[in-house]
Image (cartoon, rainbow, N blue to C red; front, top):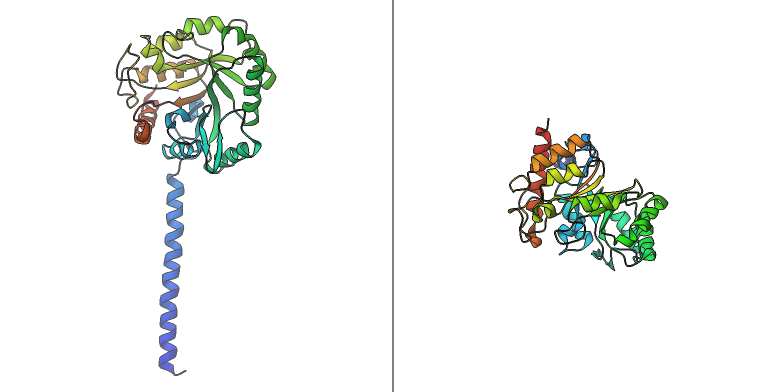
Length: 301
């Protein structure tokens, strides 16, 4: 090989080497930037210092599988999920969320959540026909690491649910659907909790209170010390069962007042986004609501 060819070879090698090095550097910086923008459970979200776990009720994405819902929840900047009964699991699993899931399906869900760095904080809203079915629900929740079961028990089941809370060390939070459902009024919830386990409390759905003509801040005050979970909404109208969700802070639910009251009470627990509108494309709505929520939290005194 003559000197000219040697020089040409070395020049070509240097050029290729520098291109490869530049590509590697670009790849590293791109990955670092991506990781910096990815929300993690350790991220300094403003609600974290208050002990609030902002997440989503998977029912927000009921038109999709649980696997797809988890992807959407992650894309909204959230790290917690409240699973709901009978949602198709997806991801190649032809089963639905609930006590009848096979161990294979349970493991798939556990692995999925671990991969996405999302915690299944709650499960519901559930009802059961008898004590045996309640036991199945609690056993299932325990197997999945659920901390709170959101529920609407029959009055005759309240004692059984109370016992199961202590047996499985899981909270049961009574949820309110709009009037005329049995628990629409917080006074009924309070009466139902008398003499029950300290692990029993309320799952406050502030949107349904507004649909029923109630003031969400006043309802929260009535339930002080008993609020274990929230379904979070903002609506376009008061006292109307057909009122629909709007971006948090832009509707009639007095979101700043609600958050201020939760802070005053020292609430700790999950706040589930439950956006029941624009079902097929509500990720932008939930994302904007989360941004609004965190801006309001930052402004709380």
